[in-house]
Length: 252
Image (cartoon, one colour):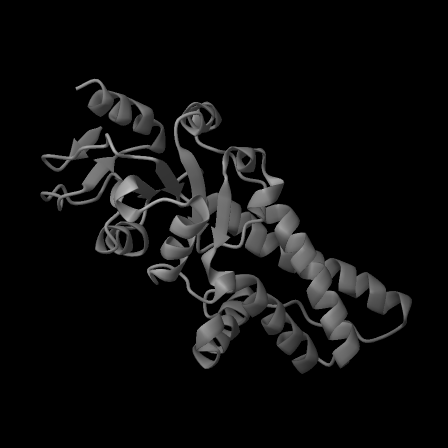
């Protein structure tokens, strides 16, 4: 389903930027598996290491404690609130030390657990036809990605389609901060009026994009309100409707 504001015109479009999580793939199941998986891995591997050294076993880390302490750390370290990998690793170190693991071992095992986290985090399944869509679009537009997530996007096959990639949290400016958008415009060497941003979040994708003068595609959830859209915003139900939308306007 395509729903767009009147007078949208994509004839000047030179670049398209994409959010990743829940835009190019469904991220909910991935995060559930990754969250539980890396904590379970840490419990198992740390326990085996401690048994081999005849040390007391560290109690398993409860996901509720892990989340609570990450959120508390984010509030204390506001500039790094979007650097999710850093928040996770620092929180693991804290919880391990509080459980009696010495500082050096806590740092070591937290780093290993984050390696496991990232190996699970990239096990995403793009929405059907996404790869073919990007292959088609990159022949006509400069493509970039702007994400608040910490997926190692460069390790995914889809990354080959993108000229530039930005992890906003790692630059201490998570969306809706305008800085990752401005940085992307500079990297792609385009103006805001020549760029279209595609994302699933109204607050983190659509609003900051249109405030800067970009066009925006909102990948809206089924339950989203169908109120009239601001000028420059188009609502799609799935990202793979994008080529048809652009072709529709180019044929006018």
